[in-house]
Image 1 (cartoon, rainbow, N blue to C red):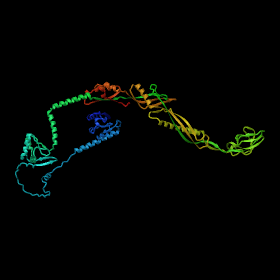
Image 2: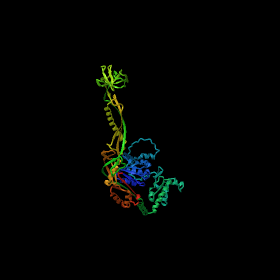
Image 3: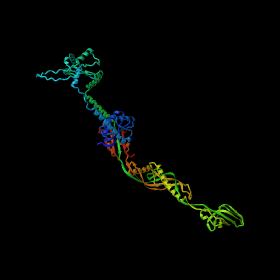
Image 4: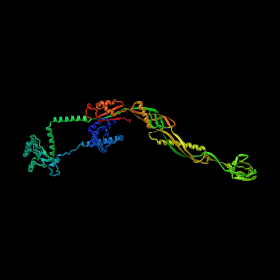
Length: 636
C-alpha cells in the first residue's frame, strides 16, 4: 500500500538514474520530492529526465524535482516533469499539475501504442490481377460468354509433371529477386556453384563494386542466373549461396564484425569470464575502500507542556531577568484633537435700562463734585439703584439737574411718581430727587451659554477622543508589542469654547486636545523568559513557546505585574559533530541502534552509498567528511 505522506529524497551529484528509480520505488509513498543539486548528472541532459518520466508513468507515484538550476527547468518541461526552485514552492496546485501532466503523458503513450499495434490491412492480389500482369497487351474489351452443352467423354486420368514456372526477375527497391526456371538447364550457373564450394567465391549480381571479371563474363553470368531455380543445387552442394546487393561500404562493416568474431575465437569464454570477474571484484574493492559515504537523518522527539509564571514589567528595566521574572516595559504616548458643536440650553434675560432726570441740591457751604457712574439708590427701595451719567459740580448751597440711568434692565426700575428721594453714595450732604418719571425699563427671556452646557459637551468630547486615541495607539503597535490594558492614562491638554458662559447664543463650538500614555511589553521578551524557565524546570535543550496570554494585570506608577500562560513544545538536542566521532567505524545497523537509543531521538534513517555493498559489510566511514548528518524538528 502506497502512503500519501510526502517523502523527500536527496539526489547525489553523480547518482545514476537506475539507483534514483530504486530509491523512488522503495520510498513507500505516492508523493516524492527529489532534491537535486545544480550539478547533478540527472539534469545534465533530457535523456535521464525522460527515462525517469516514462518509468514512473505506469506507477501511482507523483514526483516533483526541486533544483535551483535555471537551465534544468526547460529540460524537465520537455520530459513532462514538474520542477520548483524551493521545497516551500511545492504546493497543492503543483501536485495537481504534476498529476495532470502524468495523465496526459500516459494518454499520449497509449494512443501511440494503439496506433503502432493497430491492424493493418494488406492488399490482396487476385488471380485476375496476376493474369493482367502476365498479359498486359491483351484486349481489355469484355467478351460476352456463351454456354454450350457438349457431351463430356470419359477419359482416364493421366498423371503428368507440373510445369515449372517461367523464370522472371522481381525488383523490390534495389534488391533483385530471381525466381523460376531450372538451374540444371544452365551449365554456367552450375559451374559457378562448384567454384563457390572450392574457394568461397561470392557471386556478385551488381555492377556497383569492382570485379576481376570482365564485363562480358559478368553479363553472361547475370543472364545465366536469370529465371533459374538454384535450390536443389544449393542443397546438394552443402553450402550457402550468397548474393551481394549492397555497395562497397557494407564490406567495411563485415570486416569489423569479422574481427570481433576472430577475437572471440582466439580468446576462450573461460578467460573472458575470468577477466570480467576479476574486474568486478576490483571495482567492488575500490568502491568499498574509497567511495563509501553515508547520509544520516535524525528526527528529534517533541513534547508539549503548559507554561505559566508571574512577570513584573518595569520601565527602568533594560533586559530580561529570568531569575527575578522581570522584563522591560516601555511607555508610549499618543496625542489627538477634536472639535464639536452643541446647542445651548441656559436661560437668560435681557431688556432696556430705565432712565430719567434728577435734581441734585448741595446743602453744604462748599462746592461738591460728583463723578459719573456714582450710584444713587431710592430711599423707599434700596434695591433699586441708578448711576449718574456725567460728572457734575454743585456750588455751595447750589443745585443742578442730571440724567440718571438704572444699573440693570427691567421694568422694576421704572418710577412713575416724581420727587422721590434718593441717596447718593458717598455724598450725605447732597439731596437728590427725580423731577421726571424714570421710565423705559424692559425685561425678556433669552438662551444663553450655561456652565452645564460647557461641561456636558466637554465630557462627550473626552469619551469620543479616548476611543480615537486607543485605536491610534493600537495602530502604532507591531506584532511583537503587547499593550497592557489598564495602564492607559488620559490627560486634557487644552479645552476652549467659542462663547463665554452666560453669553446669549443658540449654539457654540469647542476644541479639545488630549494625550494618552500607556505601557507596553514585548511578546518576544515574555517568550524568552518562559522558554528559559521551561528549560530549567524540565531539563530540555530546545523550547518553542506559543503566543502568551496575559491575565490578572495590576498597574503601578512605573511598573505592571501580571500572569502569563502559553503552550510550549520541548525537545532535547543532539551534537552532530560529537555524534559523528562516536559512530565512526561502527556497522550501519549498530550505529542506527546507537543513535536511536540517545535521549530525545525519535527516529533515524541512514542511507549508505554505494547501495550495492552488502548490508553485512556496510560500515560508517572513519573519515568524518564522508558522514553527512541533519536533524529534523519543528523547533528552531
